[in-house]
Length: 463
Image (cartoon, rainbow, N blue to C red; front, side, top):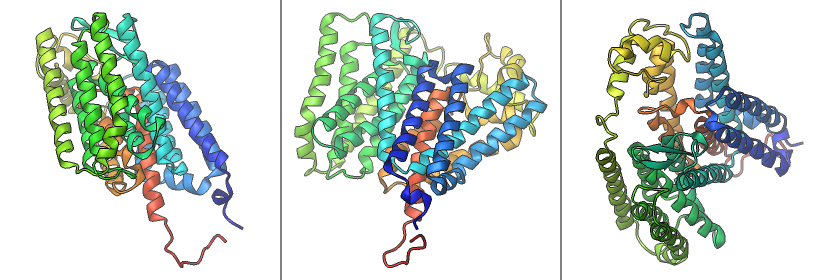
């Protein structure tokens, strides 16, 4: 008889993917997963997903949970839970966030078990498009929470209630839109083009130059390294079309989303229609064309968009310094970490532990260090920072090993999230973190599939 996982019907795989989708959608919709209730829902749904995966795909689930990415998250969760014994903040805060870290480890393992990178890419794309649409509607309608008025203009924030987090989600999903454009035909490919245009536009008008740069780099990755099913230069042209369409739309809107005249909104919509309409023609050309000039176009458009975002910040008067005050936060974090370099001050204690050091360098202290490895040192000491650095390395290895597989479409999402956490704090938004964990699981699952392939002629051990 064959093993349990081989006899499992396709319906079980679809059910697991449905639970993963529900987990991510709940986390994002529940104020981006920043509230304790939203985080609790993530923990509960991750447990449901784990139980279902162990019941229907035990071998694959065990392999996913044993992956370095999952084990490092488990180790962080365990260390964080232990730190409740010596934290300078509330022990309950440490225990709650440790549960979220454990849930992320579970999500990585479960997403790896289904070994369905195309379906996982669709999850990222659907959730990102929904969040982006809500943010754009909020900015146009001046709706607080899903939009934010900052630096003299309304910016889309979506359910995250934080424009950079929404822009990061868009950047993470952009390669998935390119994948839909080159890996499908007909209306699905055009829907991918429309989704890519919306995501690029949202990232461009959200007002965060970091996320604009990450969006450009995500598109550059899938332009320079062809995705599965990408023929000729089609993927590079798709990336250039999305980048150009998003930049052109942002120019039409002029940074005043919500206060634009009808003509500007009409022009912006016309750009989107043009992107969707022209893609079938460009695709036929691209399948016979080279990639070089289109890769260069992505680089030029991305660099121009990042420069324009920086210039817009300076013109609005929002930019006190290039790093937006982060140098003072980092100096305070370093001084705080030196007080307890070995064991740290406890998980989720950064705000309280660093308050006095921050007040010496800035008028208002912040909740997080805006640098994940540095924050890990403050809270969990040397073991914590080593685990975080190990996680960065493990994700990098998974990306390299999946570079020739169908799962490479998820690689920019896995990397962009970690890069953003060197300058911001999306790690603490469970919605962003769950999307990242699902993407990482997709990469890990592809890696497991490649290493476990049996050569032709090898006798089966399960028959």
